[in-house]
Image 1: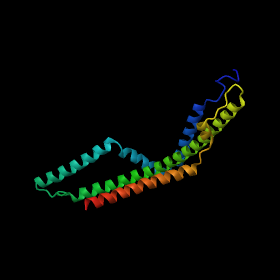
Image 2: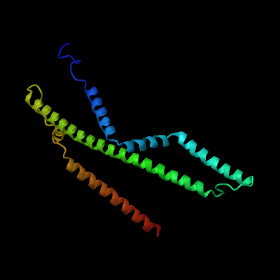
Image 3: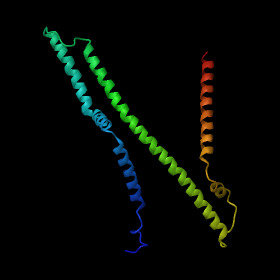
Length: 192
C-alpha cells in the first residue's frame, strides 16, 4: 500500500464517530445502578403498555366497586373512589419524579455537549480566520494575482472575540425585553 494513498490516511469520519461513541460510553459508565434502574423504569413508563395498564387498572377498580355496590356488598372503595384517587395520585407523583430524574441527567449531558460544541465552534472560527489570513498573505505574495483591496476579506481576517459577541447578544436581549415590557405597559394603559 502506498503511504500517500487515501487508504493510508486516517479516516476523519471514522475518528469522529469513534470519539462520539467513546464520549457516550464514558457517560454511560458514570451512571450508577440506582440511576440505571430509574431510567429503565422511566423507559417502561414511556411505553403505551403502561398507559394501557393504568387505564385497565382504573376501569377494573371502578367496575369492581360499582358491581360490589349493586349486589349489596360493601365495596373496598365506594364512589367517589377516594382510594383510587390516592393510588393514582401516588403513581403520578412517582412517575413524574422518575421522569424528572432522567431528564436532569440528560440535561447535564446536553449541557456538556453544548459546551463542547461551543469550544469546537470557537476553534473552528480561529482556524477559519487563520486560513483567511494565509490566503490573503498568499494573494499578496503571488505576482500573477492582481493585488486589490478586499474590505470583506480584511474584516474576516479579524478573529471574533467571544466576549464581544456575548455582550452584543446580551444588549440585544435586554432591548427586546425592554420593548416587551414597554409594549405590555402601553397595553395596560390602553385597556384602562
